[in-house]
Image 1 (tube, rainbow, N blue to C red):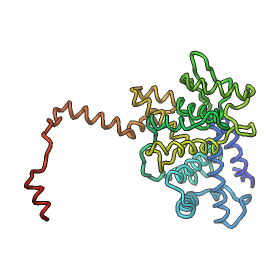
Image 2 (image 1 turned 90 degrees about the horizontal axis):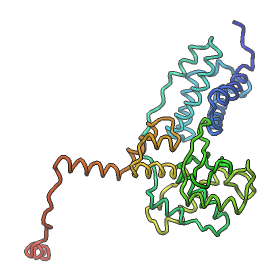
Image 3 (image 1 turned 60 degrees about the vertical axis):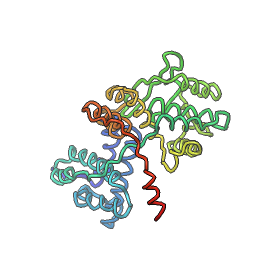
Amino acid sequence: MTKPPRDQLLALVQRFFDEHLRRVRGASKHTIRAYRDALTLFFCFLAKAARRSVADLRLDDVRAEAVLAFLNHLEASRGNSVVTRNCRLAAIRSFVDHLLRHDVARAEQYGRILAIPAKRSVVRPTSYLEPEEARAVIAAVDPKASNGLRDRALLLFLYNAGARVSEALALRPRDLHLERPRQVRVLGKGGKERLCPIWPETAAALRELLERVPPAIDEFVFRNARGGSLTRDGAAYVLEKYAHRAAASMPSLRRRRITPHVLRHSCAVALLQSGVGLTVIRDYLGHASVATTNRYVTSNLKMKREVLEAFWKRAGLEPSPRARWRPTPKLLAFLASL
């Protein structure tokens, strides 16, 4: 086998992003950015450890020992969580799997990296808002204020469609059908499309927004002050602002971090509480697997409580009502004498 050229690492990195992620997998822009950031951190770590520039790195430098050292660096030095560590590892493993297909001579070297398992992490309950809490946040928007129409339409859309923030920000006028049947075409991960029905209230808010500042057919619905697409940070700021405002009348919202993805979780839980099946919710939210949707069941205390009460009654263990206990005068007299 001929000796690989000096710049083979660079060539394989380019093929990984241009051919594998974009063309073969149809990865979203968000996924590509996440993989880009992970590999950038990894290559910078390798270069620093080897005391060479990133341009001088070779395929022989991509080893299991280096990957393990990088993962430890993420947690110990950068303070990353286990979830972030595992996401970085997933990006590296995907890239190494790509290397294995194009560089069989180093199969053993790459196989050791692919054998590195993800680290177990504590699975926390999914954070979501109860319907009255979500309504309070939406009601905190003043439509007459600057950007009020946009902000109200955005929050209604996120909650109504259970959309990812990237899906909402990519929304264009041609994706909307605001007359009966009111619906929206959502472009999800991997270029997958789904149709979601929308409430009359959401349709009215979107219609008013489009009539007030009509965008071109290819422009985004939710725009910033300069006419460009609203950013993810901008959408998060909008939601945080109104959640803070709503907390004045809704104490349960205080000291909670409410992100656009929390509204997506809130939509899923509201559907679940309404008796909608998991497979329908999966399709509504655009989940690849019903296992992802199933986590909302484990997070919903109200449904758990209802199940427990139903089981209690079915088992015939429901306690009979008892007379309320009241202290006797002698007891009160004794306590008063202490």
